[in-house]
Structures are given as C-alpha cells and as structure tokens.
Length: 612
Image 1 (cartoon, rainbow, N blue to C red):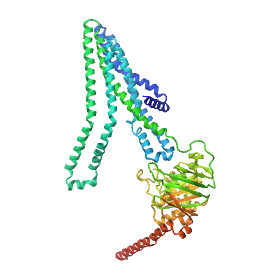
Image 2 (image 1 turned 30 degrees about the vertical axis):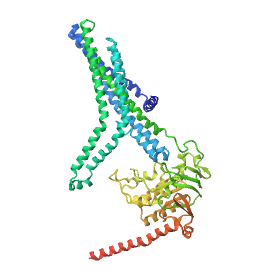
Image 3 (image 1 turned 180 degrees about the vertical axis):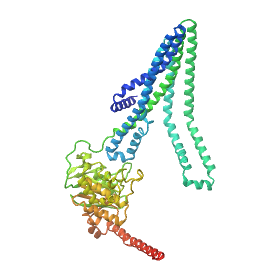
Image 4 (image 1 turned 180 degrees about the horizontal axis):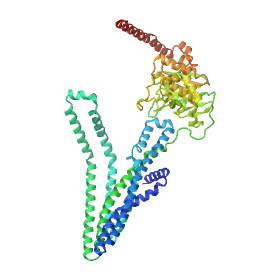
C-alpha cells in the first residue's frame, strides 16, 4: 500500500507539472458527474410533489423550467469537460512520451542497449503508446473513482435517513466485492503465465493463415483440416486455462446480483411500511428508491475503479524504474575538455557484456599519440567495435581505465566528452530528413563551413545532379520524392557529417563493409586526406586501409597480439600476414576472374548484336 501511495503521488506530480490548472477543472468534472444523476432523481420527486400539492400550471411550468434549465446547464458543462479531458489526457500522454524520449536520448548507452535496458524502456514506452494506455486514461479514471466515492457518501446520506441498517448491508457488499477483486489480482499472474504460451500459439497460427508463402502447400497437401484441428485444440486449451477466472467472475456476479436484490427488496418492503404508517411521502419514496438504485450501481463502479486504480498504480512502477535509473557515467561538472593534440591511453582495460561469462576484451594496454593514424584490425568477433565504444565513452571498462591527455575518462562530463569524437559506423542510420539536415545533424549552421565540407567530401557533385539539391530527402520509405543513395554516396554524406562536426578524434568503424574494393579504397582515401591533424582510428576486418596508417593494432579473441606498421607485421608473418595474404589472394585471383568473365560477356554481346 505504501508503494501504491508513492506511485499515486508521482502521478499527481506529473499531472501538476504538465498543467497545474487542470486540477480545478478536474474538481468541477467530479462535481458535475456526481450531481447530475442526483438532480435528475430529485426532479422526479419534485414533479410528484408539485402534482400532489396541486400548484397552478403556470407555477408548475415555471418551476419545471428552472429545474430543467439547471440540469441542462450542468449536463452541458459535464459534456464540455468530458471533451476537455479527452483532449488534455491525450496531450498529457504525449508530454510524458516526450519526457521518455528525452531520457532515452540522454541516458547512458549501456542502460539502453542491454537486454534489461531494452525491457525497461519497452515497458515504460508501452504506457504512452495510445490513449488507452496508462498516461492516456489515468486522469479520467481518477475522476470516475472520486465521483463514485462522493456518490456513495451522498446516496448513503439519503438512505440512512430511513434506516441505519443500510450501513451494515452496504459495508458487507463493498467488502465482498473488494475480496473478489483481490482474488482476481491474486490469480491473474498465474493465469497470464499459463495462457502466455497458448496466446503465442494462437498468434502464430493467425500469421500463418495470411502467409502467402504457405498458400501453395495448404492447397496441394490439403492442410485445411489439420489447421482446423490445431486451432480447435488451442481454443479448447484456452477455455480450460480460463476456467478458474470464469468461475470467479461468475461467483462475483452472483454475489453482486444477490446483494443488489437484497438491498432492493429490503428497500421496497420497508418503504411500503413507512408509507402505510404515514412516515414517508410518495415524493420521498421516489428519492429513497432512486437513491438505492443509484447507490447499488455506484458501489459497483467504485469497486471496479478501485481495482483499475490498483492496476494503474502498479503499472507506474515501469515508468518509475525507467526514469530513475542510476547513471553509469559522470553527468556532473567535469574538468575542461582538451581541444587539440589529443592522446589516448588504455591501461589494462577489460570488458564483459552483460549476461556473458567470457570477456570480450582482456587486459588491453596501448597508447595512441596525437595525430596518429591507427588501424584496428582482426577477424569478426575479435572485439574491435567494443574497443571503440569504450574509447568513445559509450561503454565503461569493467577493469582498468582510459586516459585522455593523462586525465581519467571519468573526470569529464560525459556529454562534453562526446564532443571529442566524430564517428562513422558501419550501420549508418538515415533520418527522414534532407541531405543538409543529415550533414548538419542539429549543430549550429555555418554556411561557409558547410560549403567547404560539401566540396571536401565530394557531396557537392552528388547534389549538383539533384533537382532539389541538398534539400533532397534520402529515405524513400517515408517520402516518395526521396532518392536512394548508393553505398559510396552514403559514405560521402557520412564523411561530410564527420567533417562538419570537426572533432579532434576521427573514428571509422567498418563504414565501407558493404562496398566493393574500388569504392572502399576511394572512401578511405577521402578519409585519410581529411584526417591529417586528427587522431584517427580505422577499424576493419578487411585490410585495405592498413597500409596508409602509422600503426596497426591486431586484435585476436579480445587481446592485442600484434602492433606495428604494415611492413613490420608482414615481415613478422603472423596472424596479420596470413589474413592479409588471404585477402590479397582474393583480390588478385577472384576479382581478376570476375573482370575477365565480364569482359568476355561484353565481347559476346557485341558479336551477337553486330554493328549496323
């Protein structure tokens, strides 16, 4: 209960931060929701009283007009507030979505890429996915709960004027219904666990029915009957699993129906006696019986809303867990960032990914001097990308430390620290914007720098061929007017992006893996040409870039096994030499055969076609 109260206060704080004035309209909404059915009930009693009193038609119509007008005004206000809260609830949901988005953009990288981090984010994000989710419905559900509470108190005050015994009956009814809701909550996890596999089976079958790849087999092998049997079995299993819940629902509905019948019978029996004894007027009888009916429905609403509110507050734990994750890196004031002559030292660093027992990197030590061109090579899975993520501050070593100009990485504010690096990764992700937006990436726009970057990267030649120039969009799935960049063109855009940021450390993490050898060589020549004054890292499992670098770091199973220039490592005839020779053979032999085959194909086409 203490935890639920904590989550309730958190939700109320979020609502207040969104719009403090919403609480005034919230209170008015609760009042109109509660008062409206009571006013309608009292009008019925008042009409009877007027008729029995024999008032004049003029006075009757005048009094009736006042009552009807008042009820209509309350109803208009209630409906207007309903539409207001439908809109505000959705905007509130979107504001929470933005808060989650801001956190996901600024949260430490390990907290989002891990399996646990993805789970926490997914659970929090599910609360804002639609108006039916927690942050889209909570305000209205809270208003219904408070309306039910006020309604119970109001209708109880009316019926207690007739008999105090109703306190006992109503209390027993509420207690019984709350017990049933508690039982529902208790068996819910077990039923969810048991039905989870059944739901997966059913979902899988539904996907199969619409899979065109299976359509031929279904017909040729006459699988319809078999599928029907499987679906019937899944349905039968589901019914069996849901039996405990269905039995509980039946018992709850029976208890509720019995309780309402008991209250109603008792009310009619007692009211008839009171009317016979002259202690209850006919108009009071209408109010009394109407209050009993409204009380019964309001009790049901109250119990249901208590269960819903309990569920809502339980879901708040996902939001709370996401928003209050403990930072891994330094987000406080850090030391000043060096702006030139950047050197990086690795001192005995090791790293093991979460849920893994074998370390990806083991006891690495190396020093990278300002202005050096470093190639980090090795076979797939050697730990190259992990090393770069550690240097960039995306991951934190389990052991050892990383020094920037002699200062520990942790001494810098992490957001400031990221300013040191311009990185181009293999998995280049394109946003649904223009070429210019992709290059600038939200940095302050400087036209002089921008034009120079276009020329240096060769992107100016690309946009010169486009009708919309650098305003051309580059994600075709989103915009029909967008273009599809080739691999080489994309890498030139990414080069322009790195050049525009102009950070002192340049990192290329296999950006050319999807390109052919010639295109790869051209891209690397571009990068090398514009990295003369930077500490640069070239990461690849292909060795086309290594000959241009000052030093080569060879990684094998998470350890540095070779360090030296291309000539030195070739002379050593170890792993680097063997990998280089294997790739060189491919480029010498296989590529040559492909070129010869293409040449023969062209000659054959000319012979067959002839020349006119």
